[in-house]
Image (cartoon, rainbow, N blue to C red):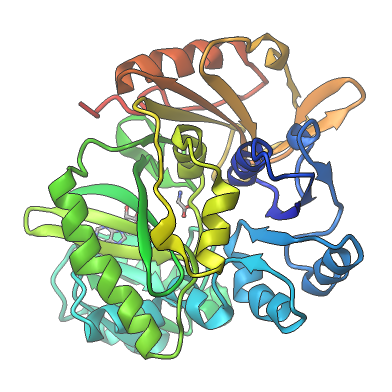
Length: 416
Ligand code: AMP
Ligand code: GLY
């Protein structure tokens, strides 16, 4: 088979790494990819949002299957477009992807189908100022649309809530409507499934570490590290997630004419009264994927094809027994402004067992590796326990350096 993967981050490197192991693969492409993937896939210089160019490329090269990594092309209807031309592509169509791309669609769906989530109301940005005055604090304010991680504010008091709303003013259409949401206490976790809209197979759990500093301090980021599985999602919690959240969501999406096909990401708060949904994403998570895929033994190409052909009931997934830990190495300043072009050393010294370095934001300058993004690398290691995996991952991290390299030292530290 010829396979094209769309995206360029650590998640896509993990997909490339996994799919490259499929015995069914003949040629692998990644657009726009990153230089860390070059030994496994041909890099195609087309951006993830250039849908027509990607389509032309897939036709010209006779790509058998296209796999979409990030949400942006999904929100542009890349799946609808490829399908209208008779091409096979794995991911949800635009209407189904709105479960991620519109927080109003997502919240309305959860309310209508009684999926446990924070109580919330949707108001226009101008009205929100008046509304917050009569609401209990803390409160969570979210903009409706995609905002690259900047669309959520947790306000402890009226003043912070007002400042949060002020901050949304520059976001244009994405912040036309605001969700005012009850603050939920608990532990966060991620749960992934694959579905064809009807049949659904649970994949794995993970725990992201969203804040930039140790001890969950500092601003939110795209994710500074992940472990998989998370011990917080016991078999009992998993069955609650499937029965109270995943199945009703898929039934609701189908009933509303948005049948969902692809990987579905449930971002959860595990509260004393059970798992509640913070958000759905229409794709794999990043960095969670870098922790999850190294544990999967089954050929992921077979699994995606089973979903496309409505035979997920024939799939039995095999997972490794080990736990995994992924530590993200980021540029100084991230998630704010950061410098690029710092030389990365040590990447040739990672010959450690059960350890993989995924590239997220790297570039080449002559023979050297340089930094090219906020999140630069993801170092994943597997081990018998989370603590073994942690030790291995940090041993590899110790060998890598670049000026201003920042990372959390406590990824997986609280998992027992
Ligand atoms: P979201 O993009 O909706 O997942 O929100 C980003 C982050 O904000 C989450 O990972 C949580 O840490 C936090 N968050 C969002 N909604 C809530 C809520 N209702 N209660 C508490 N924390 C929340
Ligand atoms: N790690 C969070 C996300 O992928 O949305």
